[in-house]
Image 1 (spheres, one colour):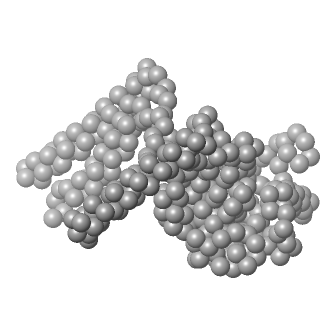
Image 2 (cartoon, helix red, strand yellow):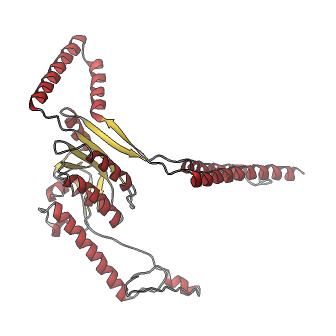
Length: 342
């Protein structure tokens, strides 16, 4: 009887957890069908204000009352002179717009990047500057090609563009970086990898061993070259390599267009370099972190960070909640264990 009691208790808990998950998934599906697509919003952060606030906090801790008054008086006089000069010249100070782009293989973040760039292009002009902090090891050619084209929109608008590489901008990441008027990099940032790679497994021998037939039909001689399940021919391999070489040539031509002084025979080998080496090779223009660049800029002009944030609809929120519940449920069931095995 004790075994049946424990088993019934275990079963009741398991069913309750499963039903709760199912209920959430059903609610998510209903919300997804009935809910309207929700657009994102542009968030603007004044980084110059943030840095000035840090300075004021430290000043209040480190300076005496008299020193604080003297500094405040000097700053007011400086601001007044600056405003008068600006009024006389009828020109405003240029602003620095900051965008962060951190992406993986599929560069899905390009959808946010295009919104951020479209937004800044409505107000920015040649007096301003755009700093994009790129962090990516590269990925799909078409995805990073689009991301690079988004950056080119800034160049086409004749707005100075600087790319900062604090950690890594390799392959597709460097395809983006080379578009800039100026590329800065931290001393140990990874830069370069101007090359193309493709790899895939082939299971044809496994299928044959298990007497499994695989059929593939195409129209067009090279609709498919290498395949995962069928037998690959030397002709298909040659065609595949030819396509890789063509892609590499396009990549090299793209880089050469924006950085014509590069010795492509030396840097387009697929290798990557650290910042210091990249500077010597001409892949970057200056060794500097984005933090240093922003601190210097904030002393002279307004620094605004743009961030496009997508609103998550109810379906997505419920979906994530369901995922978390499934994970918790799995852990809980593991803790409960099967009755009679204590």
